[in-house]
Image (cartoon, rainbow, N blue to C red; front, side, top):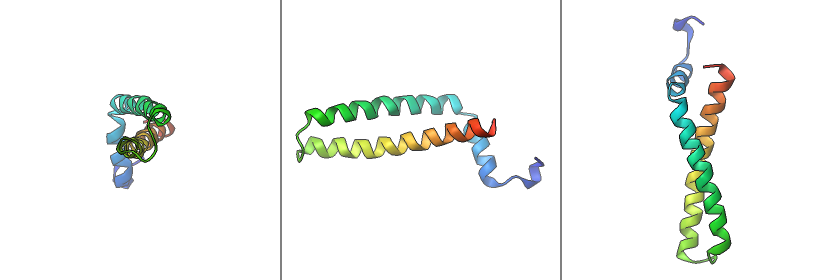
Length: 80
């Protein structure tokens, strides 16, 4: 592809793919933390303050898991 015709999104993705190994580490850590948070659902009493923190952790970690997984998938699909 001609460098003049590339979009900003492609250039940004290529920049992210340079850090693929670090993004993979973030992905693995996110998976482990999501599993630990899901396990804590069994132990924590619903309605408690700790339960709210577990829910907030799951929301944040799920977003990080989704973002890092998407970047890894796009890098693999495009062969970057």
